[in-house]
Image 1 (cartoon, rainbow, N blue to C red):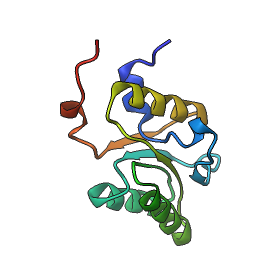
Image 2: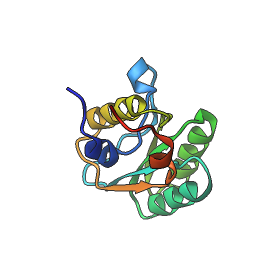
Image 3: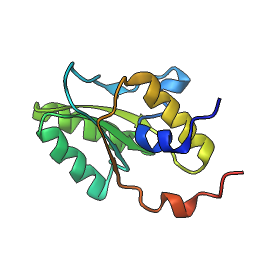
Length: 130
């Protein structure tokens, strides 16, 4: 059964690494810790948003297409010590890829408290679903 688009947006951004049996990069959230998905968080404003939210003690679901930048951000968050993070590599180039990503997030996380979408151009880039 396909995942409704609104659930894809709520699920946000965790990644395809786990779908292919590869470990996602690093920590799972602690009980009671706020879970925040920041799409496009491997660079620019998304990275700064992720760092700021992690500094408040949140668990950040880091999303982006670049594994090196994702791992670097997770390391930085973990070293700071206040929050935690886990990276999922995902490309939002098609609805199918978004659905796959959402499935992984829904599988790995019981709840997602906040979605911070930094990939504003997404809706303009995707073809209309058939």
